[in-house]
Image (cartoon, rainbow, N blue to C red; front, side):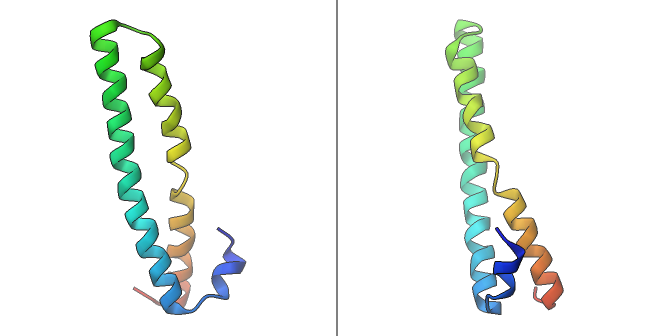
Length: 82
């Protein structure tokens, strides 16, 4: 997310974006936990194999929203919003 784009948004739009990103972050955490569980279960039952590493690949794809939330928090701090 671009800081330049955030500066053009209203206060309410920034608060809405933060709320949406927080809910997305919770969903991402649940999916990451589920995928790690699949990898551990596969390793315990069948040893190292395809289903051990395949779910772990998706964790890297899911875990990219953190920088967007940090950018929004910085913009909120600049505007004195909480």
